[in-house]
Image (cartoon, rainbow, N blue to C red; front, side, top):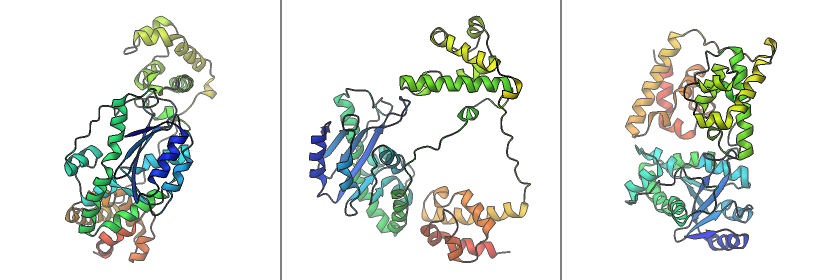
Length: 375
């Protein structure tokens, strides 16, 4: 394993891997510990060598674009969605020829699709997950951490070979490749921005408008504090404690101290800020208080529609079980509901429905159409 922490070393890595027909990559990010999620390490393996690139020291990864975007270089990733979004957002990198070992595992019907499970089952190697929750933005990294990071890509080329061979035996390589191509073109935004994230917290449905205002003020204070310290918001104050303070609307340090579950250390360090947020909420007029949006009314039940969905679901289940793959992976219920509403009459019309894959049409399209015209 080679640790890369300079532009000069990155250039050498790029030259070394340019001739490879296959590379495997993975990332370590900081979202669990830090306010700003970002790529902290990029691991890259060929069949012979492994490199761990410190992306906090080497912030410009442009030299790697010539490798990543070469259609003659297959880039192997396990569960590519998040890695590709982060690499695209933070470094403008995209992949031209993807092989996702998680997707491959789903198509071959693996019951456990985590990387550690697959590597142990197919390669006889047990991956240590000791540093799964490590703060990868903290420097320096220990040798043990670097070795751990390297293991996540070291075995991917061999795992890819096993998965590809099985896909070919089953005649499903084309199915998997359709999913790979879709992942290559995904947008780089990691998360859609939620305008009112505080409304999504648990156990808040019964809060009064005044308590909701307090929750909003507390949440905004926590976000500012977390961003300033670059720590995950829950490390400033947990969600349960946040809701408990909003519910109690304490007006003094003594009242704050009576809130169940609020640690004395939090009261000592954060008490003044918490009471300040509550005071702001109490100062609002009734017209300024937030209101929870009304719940969307569900349409009245349609027995005929539900029966049709159940029939389509039964078809899906029989095909999935025969193929030996997960039922929801073959076609989720939401997609079945869309088919029941649209009632396509031909395979072409079925294939034109939103989010429908060609491989899904091939796998069960004719049986779904037959069920739509039955009875």
